[in-house]
Amino acid sequence: QVQLRESGGGLVQAGGSLRLSCAASGRTRSYILGWFRQAPGKEREFVAGFNWSGGSTYYADSVKGRFTISRDNAKNTVDLQMNSLKPEDTAVYYCAARPETRYEYGYWGQGTQVTVSS
Image: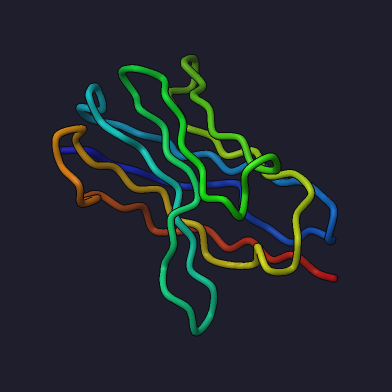
């Protein structure tokens, strides 16, 4: 069982930065932790992923070079550093987790709102 809780959302101007944190508890070893987002009227989409055991990272093309996913060992969080934010990055951001051996993300946080003003 894995429990996830996001924090760090807010309002920022275009070009600014925000850092989201996903506090993970439970058996996270051998899990993939991912960040997803859902904008109003759109489907939820993958943003970035982190392999808890191996440290590999994955990004959607739309955020490559602007977003960085990383683990904070001291806080046991997986963070998403978002730079050069654009209005189209506005969405509710969710943290999710799945075992390495499964394709579907089965654990989700409650989400945190990110709003980028132009």
